[in-house]
Image 1 (cartoon, each protein chain N blue to C red):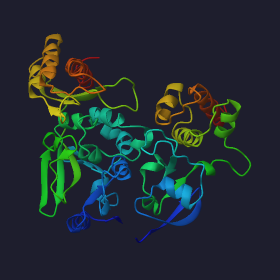
Image 2 (tube, rainbow over the protein chains, first blue to last red):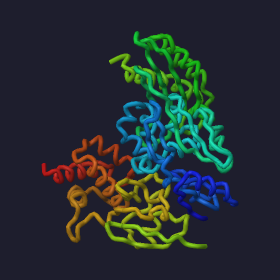
Image 3 (cartoon, each protein chain N blue to C red):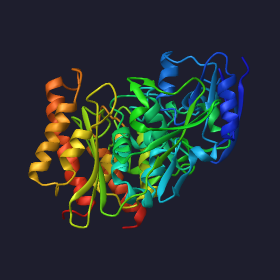
Length: 287
Length: 158
């Protein structure tokens, strides 16, 4: 197995395109090293992308943010301006493993590992984030909700890599939040995750919303019906009840050791409702 | 297979070693540099026994490749004492009997040091959350948290 540390995106793409025996991108490595150790990944080449400036920077761009795919969770958590703008994304990132794991793990890796329970993905979907992808055929962008195809499967073509996440301009009176249900508070994997991102008009009426659920289907879901339950309301009790119902209705979960189908469906509604209440508070709608 | 040549700094000393691409930093520390204070527990980043600090960042050395250490500054438990003088955290761990079998101790000492460098006055709850990635199967954590609180107090001169 060879190891390369390209300094530019072009060099990384050339290396990925030229690898005959299979190549893997190495960012934080917190999933990849476990796969290598277990023999589940046997690439001929590792391309360490941490020396490429575009993948390592957090930039305010066009009123929004451009986040490098290899920015670590701790770097994102410690960026006060970003946490102020997108607290719901930081909620999700904080849940990813221990302090040690967050010191290495990245949102790009969390997305590309394609776990249905990935903690940073529902918030990115709710935020309307787009993922920027580069490869030998050029550059493309996709909404985060379209990127993962199923457990362990992404829409990346051979030789492509995720470069950055683009977050849109934040309207005034906006707030987002992510909550997950786990039996313990740390070092666990979501039984259900729910992210809500909403904007209020100057009358306190919800003018736009996006809702996403994790760990209740083969991939994180965008749930337009749940968002529709909030839009046009003051996010009052009736709206929250409809939101919870729509969230539960969207679930297509599996039974596993972390929870049964019935349990996940019920808890998804509860988590979505609680996330909406936090998002509302962050948008300045309630004390 | 060609081995990778790595030049790095461990506890302030420049070192060089050869490693396979698949070798972890933990393996290089223990098997190439004979710094066996850093322990292997799970090998999957769940237990924290292999915690080290790389360029100021706390991480699991089982989840970093040795080749990635090129040009980095690594701090391990071997660098905590100043000659025969123990670091306050080490002394407080002994005073509070915050260890039994000792396998988790080097990782917890390094993780606690990393916390106190960022936050010299952590609450009990902050200590418990920061150390959530360091498993101890002997102590029940209480004495560990007491020792970190006491060391923090002493280091602040309070």
